[in-house]
Length: 393
Image (cartoon, rainbow, N blue to C red; front, top):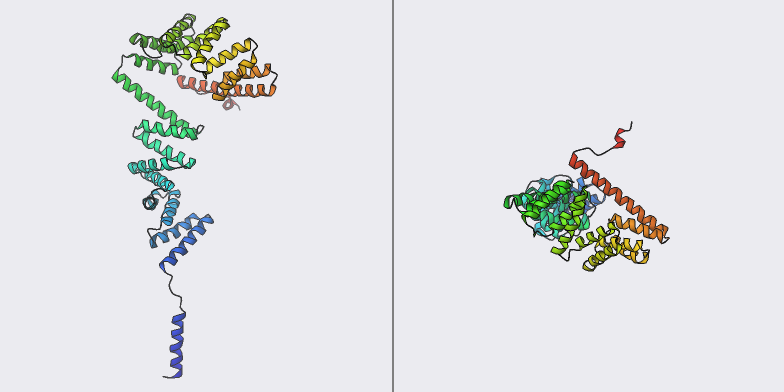
């Protein structure tokens, strides 16, 4: 062999040895994973999708890639593409509550209602992230109400209200569910017992809600005639009579409160109202006796506490009035009358800062309640709410 030929042979052999070997499958997976997470840290999710997809193509059982790919596709609105990846991740590790939640939401958007319901229910019970749990709960409520499963919807909305008491989405959902439940119950009652005392009582409640006091009284009288032993009927009739504009009906309220107490000697609310009536008559001692009787039955009864505090204040015993009022506002910060009485007591005790705080709270609560009454009035009459700003040039 010539020297030149030998040289070329050796050179080719060296080049073959020096050529880089193709990366192994594990190395490729590792490279794509590193790139994907780097792109996520750089907030480039569209590019990260391609890297995670490459990992899944190489290893369909890679939990991290399947989960991340499903999440990224979901938030891009690509629900049909996201679903199989989220499902694979959830099947591999069923305790991934957030992945199960996203899978349920994905299925809901793809109108796979039965699967969505099962996955959302499983996730809702396991989630500890309040924000995600809120979203899942609202989706579940939508599914339940669509299938008229109002009892389950009510259970979910009550759970959400515990953590989100002021969230308008939760409050609206609660309003819709309870309104639908009331309507459903009313319809069932009308079919089952259209002439029963309970039917007339239910009709009276609806009329009372609408502000129809004469209609309320008329239906409560029918309820009483149909069943004189209806629980609470005398108290309800007394409350409606007391709200009447007719003096004769107002006077009849006392008799109905007395009948309520006769029927149920532990009715602290009716006993409290009798105390209120005695206060209106100016008989402080008889009023105090009723209030004390009510408080003995129910120590936290707000109206009895406020009434008793008012008597103490009229007798200039502010030290006795103060704890009663403070307990009421602590138990129910929305009780505007208690805040008003408390402001008066603080002012008389020469505590101006406390008095101002309570008066400010009272005025805010009163304004809110006045606004709510206006909303209800507009709902009943069909009028638009007053909007002075709209009339300004």
